[in-house]
Image (cartoon, rainbow over all chains, first blue to last red; front, side):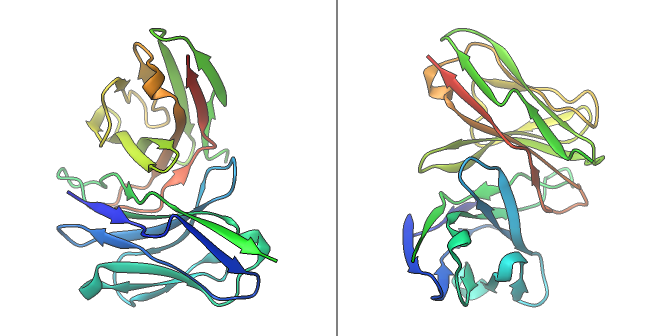
Length: 117
Length: 114
């Protein structure tokens, strides 16, 4: 069964400092990996995704993530955080439906990012 | 395009009542899904559909029914609501191109079961 682990429930970072959010996954086949962000009371917005190719992927809002197959990780990074980055961040993994279509995503439990002024 | 829409935004039920959460998308997406979000649990997949007439169970399907009679609509039915179903429910849709793709989420329905 597929699973996603986000080891950090809460992370506090000073504004302007760098950020790394950890994500480890377990999946039996080729993983398709995603990072989503959720602001309070809002739905989820896609930050970036990895399907294949270059293992360093760029996303919106200055975020990037690196896929490391040997470590089963897909960590999210940002060189300098802004107060508006305070939100909940979810890592997700997906696969291919046995019938040939897309399977559902499995989400991690989320990391709550707090930005200190 | 309205994207993914969900109604209602808020709902309070009594134990044992039934209701349907509505979800619609106007992007002609083949794939649609329902998730529930609980504090400290992330999002968990309830049911999904890869096209009209095709549905399958996710991680937490018990207590929920779905059907997909059209490409646009994917309602979620609670036949007999229980307090354990108090949650925020998100509907999502995406292209089904043989691999998982970006899922577009609706704004959510916050359900309380008393």
